[in-house]
Image (cartoon, rainbow, N blue to C red; front, side, top):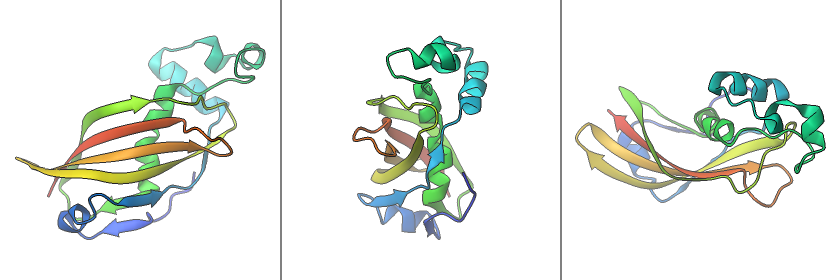
Length: 156
């Protein structure tokens, strides 16, 4: 994954709030590697064979090792850096998730990208709460790898 300027840069929180209900864009493609899956397995202590044993996984239900669903979910902040940035904030706080689903497993070697829609923005005591609906697409697949609603607090 390369580091470039995001597709959209919002000058301040007000300009971001103004696009509520709009699609924000799509990230660049990112290839899921076995090394990345292995490192995630080490970090989370989830060493299930379907993720870390390429030979056994090749004979398994997906024909190859698959990325952890939570690895796919955890890519959202990085994929988001390709899509948008809000300038003029003191900080953004990850407040949680409303809903997460993993409709399609991601096999090692697949390419994924994020697609983001700002679905809702509401005032909170610290600033604004933003809900972004993310779809992590898999190159060449009809079903997405992950669909999630992230909730962030944006502090001006």
